Amino acid sequence: MSPNALNFRHLLYFWAVAKEGSITRAAQRLGLSAQTISTQLGLLDRQLGQALLAPQGRSLELTDAGRTVLGYAEEIFRLGDKLVAALAEPQAARPRFAVGITDAVPKLVAFDMLRSVIAPPLSVRLECVEGDLDRLLADLALNRIDLVVADRPAPQRANLRLQSHLLLAGGVDLYATDALHAAHAPGFPRSLDGAPLLLPARDVPLRIALDAWFDAHEIRPLVVGEFTDSALLKTFGRAGAGVFPAPSGMRKLVAEQYGARPLGTLDGVRETWHAISAHRRIPHPAIAAVLAEEHPADGGTGSD
Image 1 (cartoon, rainbow, N blue to C red):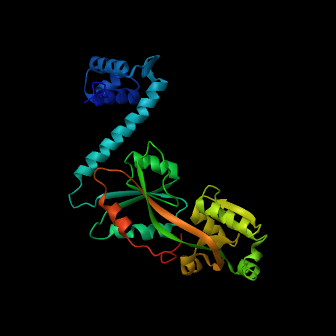
Image 2: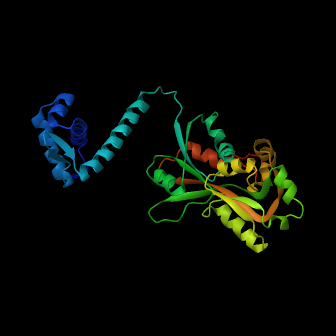
Image 3: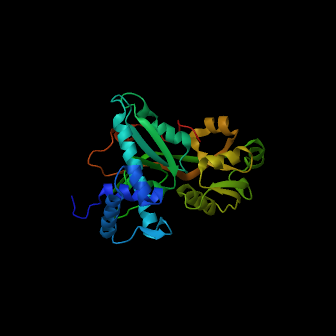
């Protein structure tokens, strides 16, 4: 262990004093003498090179450094509680498999990619979290999650040792509810000029491809909404707010869930989904199962 390694007992004493507001009350809570806690807090201050607590009347208040340390301390002790709880579970309990999913990934696409891991032989306890790609990659690097499913490969960064795997690729259609379909299906794609359109946010790869397609065909639709969440985009589409894109292979499910029909396929526009993993000495076995799963291009899964 490094000579500068943090003494977690000292951190516990600090946490107790911060919560109680005084050394005396913290000592009563921990069953220790006030002198012992005071001495250990002094050692912690010297090790960190900053005072964590400052007198305020008859109490102690956190310094700026103390507030920072308290945040980390609470996270450390929370993880410690999770460790104890995990070890207390019966051996037959399902192993955890945590997956981060970006907002741009359709929910049933994610389901299709992950459903095999909750069934035998793996039978994992699947935990799914949603968020933006940068935050999910940070959680991946910190071992908080095991895999990220995204609409783009991982960025190449020297400080992140990540691997990207293409899971699924397919064509894209534009869909519309009945009234919009009747207005814009004849003469597609020229009929899209001036049509109300619901689009992904500007930094989403599909949006970049859509903008390029419209430019190439000299079409100027009326953009009435931009969304980071693909499910919310389609919900607005179901309400008839505008024409919206979705995978070509999801026509049946888009009709069932959103009451929309395809206006036509956008030639040359493809949507892709990727699994991103970090280099681990012992990779999670569920990752191999996800990567080995065969996902049909252009269909079969469903939309949000």
